[in-house]
Structures are given as C-alpha cells and as structure tokens.
Length: 404
Image (cartoon, rainbow, N blue to C red; front, side, top):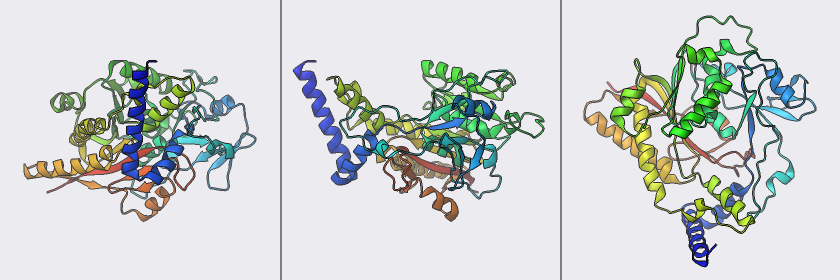
C-alpha cells in the first residue's frame, strides 16, 4: 500500500467519524460506533415449509420446545429461546401463522469487543442445511438480524394477500414474508390445505443478485408456488416509474409492499474497515466513503418508495426500511415522500398516505423494547437499552388510504 493511498484512506475515515459525530453528537457517536463494531448478532428464522423437527435436529437436539419465563420458548439443553416480535391489534392479524425465530442468550463477553478488534460473526446457529426428513429437502432456517424479521412481521401479511418485496435480494425478508402467506403448506400444519391463494412478487434490479435471490427462494419455498405462479422472481429497475408500473402492477395492486432500500450500510462498512486493518490493509468501502453519497442514495430511495406507493392498493400498507444510521436516508426520505404525495394530490390523485405505528399504544409499547422513535418511524440500534443488540435498522410503516 502506497503512502498516498494510506493517507487518502485515513482522511476518508476521519471524515466518516466527523460526519456521524456531527449528526449524533460526539459522545453518542463514540458509544454507537463501539456498538456497531461488535460482531453482528443473528437469529435463526425457521423455515416452516420444512419440519421444525429438522431444524432442531440441525441444532443437534431433539428436545421438545418448552415455554420460557419471558413468554417465548426454549429448547432444553440448547439454551435457545423463541423470539417474540411485537403483535398488532389490527383486524386480521395472523401472527401465529407467521415467522418463527430463535435466538441464543447473549454471553457477557459478547458485548466486550473493542473498536479495534476485527469482528467475526456472532451467531450460535449453524449454517442452514437441507431438511433431512423432508421430501423436497428444503432448507431448515435462515440466519438473519432479528430486526429484519421484525419489519416483516410488522407488515402483517395475511394468507391470500398480494405482496411485493421490491428490493428482495438476498431473500431473507422474502422468506420471512412467505411464512405468513400460505400457512396451509407449512410442513407441521394440522389444517386442511385447501386452495392455494395469494401471491408474492420478489424483485431485484441487479442481474447477479436477482439470480442468487431466485436460487435462495427455490431452496426454501415449495415448488408448487413457483409452478402455479403464486411466487414470482422478477428483475425490474423500480426507480424508472413507467417501466416499473408496467412490470410490477398486476390486478388492482398489492396489499403489502416491503421496500428494504439500498443504503449506506454503515455497520458493514465499519466491519470491513476493522477486518482490513487487522492485516494492515485498507477497506475500499471506507476509502471510497464520501458524505455526499447519502444524498444520492436518498434520491433513489424516494423513487423506490414512490413506486411502492403507486403499485399498492388503496388500503394497502408499505414498509420502508434501511440499515443506515443516516437521517437523510431515513426520516428524510419519508419527509420527501410526504411532500411528493401532497403534490400528487393537488394534481388530482384520489389517495393519500397515513403514517402507522404511531397511535397503537400497545404495539408502540412493545416496539419500545426494540427501538427508539424517530420523527416518522423507528430506529433499531445495537446499543438500545432493551439489550437485544440488533440492527441498525430504520423502519416506517405507511398506509395508502382513500382521500376522497
């Protein structure tokens, strides 16, 4: 590495810290940075389309699941607990059919990584494997940050819904959404299967990422969903409104849309930088970081969110999420969207938007154990007082409602 390269990288890192210290305050940023530098904690999202006994077999245990003190459940001897996501009181909630996640309790040393220590994955769970007793050998589980399962749960997908995952790769949130759509196909379901209804459209604009997305979904979800057109993987640039509308819009629109937008992903950047430092190198992610990139990303994010609103049904819900800690990409995008919708209304559109997760006191109380409120949404951070060490993840839930 040349001296010039090292100096350029050092300047970029210094600028990175100054930028976020300005946003968060120096003391708060120092604390948040340490938390972001910790190894990522993972939960195991169980694939309910394969027998749950196979998941427990993969963990090396055949013990039954028992209730735990906190209202979740645990597997004797393995110290895993079922994660309880906040449950909405809105009509049609079907949380019992949805995503099932397990976590391992944190050890004291899990939170003692220094900011100069290269992070390594903190998961307690093995890599997903093919379910040995399942005829189709679907994968047993998906390891993910529990905040991702949280936003999928809060979208409250119901059996029979038409659902769009607009930026779906690599597929973890799509798999979480799919758990709620076809409960009759769950491997352990005792209910009659009946007619398959509902649709999940998973979109990814990048060719390689779209191919990987399709491979992952085929590994986790029943083959008949693909064959019968209930599950579709597409490749559309959703920032181009005319082509996006033509390619995405089917029927009267979508009941639920997830926009997990591309973002600055600062935790990934920090981890890449710390790992590179351990071998005396510089991570290109940090060397190429520029403060202005957030504004460029926000432009794309607003376009994606507006597309989501246009293809959603009146009465539908849209979840906007990023793993960024940059306000420009979070509340800033929601604020810009609200202004654009107001302009659309003046031009004659007959719908408007309504921010959710603001007035349901019971649900908000549950969310406060996970996240802090922002101007328009919520932010999950790894140093949240709840102690989950999930995130970062910003999310805001929006309803598209009749304005007439």
